[in-house]
Image (cartoon, rainbow, N blue to C red):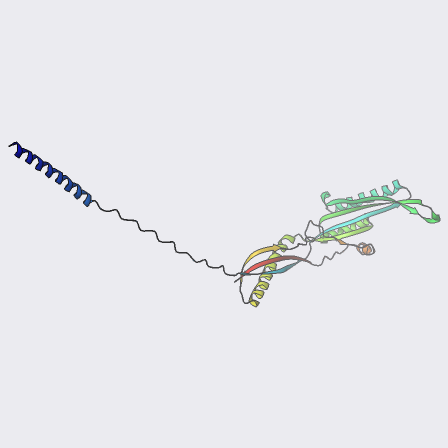
Length: 266
C-alpha cells in the first residue's frame, strides 16, 4: 500500500516538472525576435559646380552741364601816398570810408563787405648810393560779395567815383551749381554705360550690373561760395573805369562730373 502511494507521488511530481518545462518553453517560443537594424546608406556626394567665369570691364566717363554765372564777387582797393605816414593813412581811411558808405547806399549789406587786405610801406629814393625815405604808400583791399552780376557793374562805377583806384579781381559764380553738378553726374553715368556696352560687345559679351562706382575729381571753383577768381590785370583796370556803368560779361561756365565705373559682363 505504502509502496503504491510512493509511486503515485513520484509520478505526480514528475508530471508537474514536465508541465512546467513545457510551459516555460512555450512562453519563450512565443516571444518575437528583435529585428537587426540595417546599416544606414552612405551619403551620396553632391558634385560641386565650378563658378561661372564672370568678366569685368572698367570705364571712365564725364558729363558736362553749361551754366551762365549769376553771382559776382569783386575785390578792389584804395591806394594813397604821402610824404608822411600819418597823412597817407588818413587819406586812405577817408577814401575807404567813403567807398563803404557808397556800397551801403546802393543796398549792399554790411555782412557782404569785407576788408581783405591792408598794408603800408615806405617809398625809397636809391639815388646817390644811399637809401632815403621819400614817402609812404597805404593799400586797402575791399571784397564785395553776394551781389548779382548786373548790380555789380553799377557798384564798380559808383565806387570809382567814391575813391577806389585799383581793381584786383572779379569772380563769377553760379548759384545753381549743385543742381547742375547732379545733372552732370547723371550724364557721366550714361556715358560710362555706353562705353561699357561697346567694350562688352567687342569682347563678345553683354553688359551686366555695375559693381563699383567712383566719383572723380570735382572742380568747385564756380560754385557760389567757393570764390572762383578771375583776376583783372593792372593794365586792364582802366576798362572797368570807363563809362557811366561797367558792363560785366560772365560768359558761360562748364560744370563737369567725372566717374569711373566697373561693370560685370555675362
